[in-house]
Image (cartoon, rainbow, N blue to C red):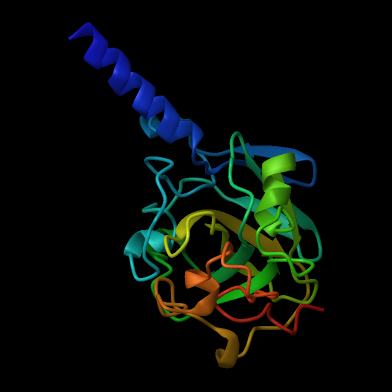
Length: 239
């Protein structure tokens, strides 16, 4: 029994170490704590939608894709349009795959905002640089090394209540993509008037088919020399 308990704890520890999630945010030098995996009930009020574990989402059509199963948070963070927001991880172990950052206009009330409409738009992403897929020349390799990712809120974006969603897509297992996404509530301030057109708005889940080349790519097969993240490009009206 004792041996089984040790094995079980060891397996759990391996699973935890093998994955990761956003655990805090930094805006204008101020830190906003997020949730901690496997113990959300002990976390203080936060701007982040609650998530329960570090486990990946395995299919692009899973509702957990949206915000890792999270729901509306009690707090918000104010940020000026054109300023940077930094997502922070306490752990991350994968080095192959893209980083994608999305936003969603929640209208007048976060409490009724579920992010279930076709309203998500990308403000930032980094996939592969160079032509070697079996390398650490990937966006998530930067997260692996720095445990953070900073993105600029579009300077001309109209003020309002928005969800910001950080997504890491791990491609280290051939044909077995792993999605990790968390959301937080931010209030954008400024005098901008820009809104992304419907042509760039996506639904989450469902921003791409499961057989999208950016999802099914085998980084070890040695033939591909380029990579395009799924879900389309960053909103071209960024500036």
